[in-house]
Amino acid sequence: MEEKIQEWLRIKKQQEKHEQLVKLSKEEEEIQRQREKQTEIEQKAQQKYKDWLQKKNQEKIEMEKKEKEKAVLKEEQEKERHKRAEEKFKEWLAKANEKSRASPKSPCYPTSPYDKSYPSPSFCNPIPWKPIHVPPPETSLNKTPGKKTTKISTNQQRKCQQSPSTAFRLRNSARAAQLLQKR
Image 1 (tube, rainbow, N blue to C red):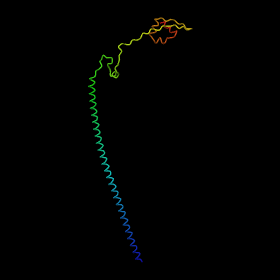
Image 2: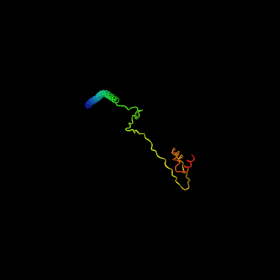
Image 3: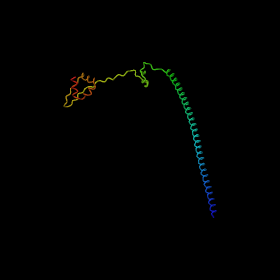
Image 4: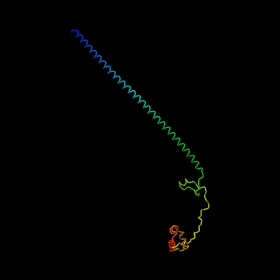
């Protein structure tokens, strides 16, 4: 029986060793697989980064080309616009030299740059304006009770007409007549 037990123990030890070896080999394989997977992921990441970098460089080159083309096109348009403006200016200058100019004796001859903005009059009256002669009003004596009124002489009336502000202040008052007499 002892032999059987020893045999069994020996077989059991061998099985345990075999299981440990299998377990170790599986762990090593798993570790190896993880390393390979990690290196594969790193390679893919590097490849993606290279592709992205190359794409960005191409986009940058294309953008620079487009910007150069835009700059060249803008410069050509600017030259064309400048050329057209120069031609139009020359045409205008030729036409402006052909046009008749206002004589200095005319009443609308421009003497400053601001005078050119107003149109010349279409009609000028040859007869100058003269004021209409209005005879002075006759003074009427309004008799009011309680007030003493005096008659104003024609000389004093002329003085009153000469200074309208005085006449405006002193009108319709008995005091005005007295002040006018004192003058």
